[in-house]
Length: 89
Image 1 (cartoon, rainbow, N blue to C red):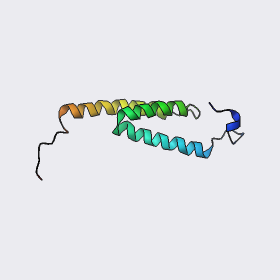
Image 2: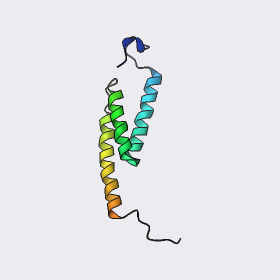
Image 3: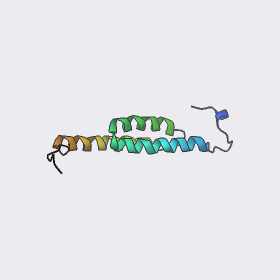
Image 4: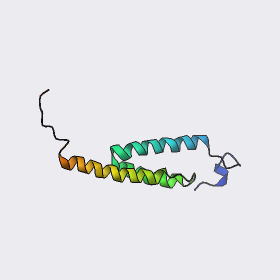
C-alpha cells in the first residue's frame, strides 16, 4: 500500500488522477467480464486489490459477472448458436 506521504490531501480525500484511473479500470473490467470472461476475471482480481483503498465492491461484482458470462458463453457455444447455416445473403 501507499504511505501517507503519497496522498496529496491530509483530510483523506483521494487523488483525482488515481480515482479517474481506478474508474477507467473498473469500466474496462466490466466490459471484458462480459465480452471476454477470463480477462474480466483477472481484472476483477486487480480491482479487488486496488479497490481496497476506497472500499469498493466493484471487484467482487466484476468477478461474479465474469463467472456468469462465462457460463452463458459456454451455453451459447455448446448449443451451436454461433454456427453459420446460411452461406448466401
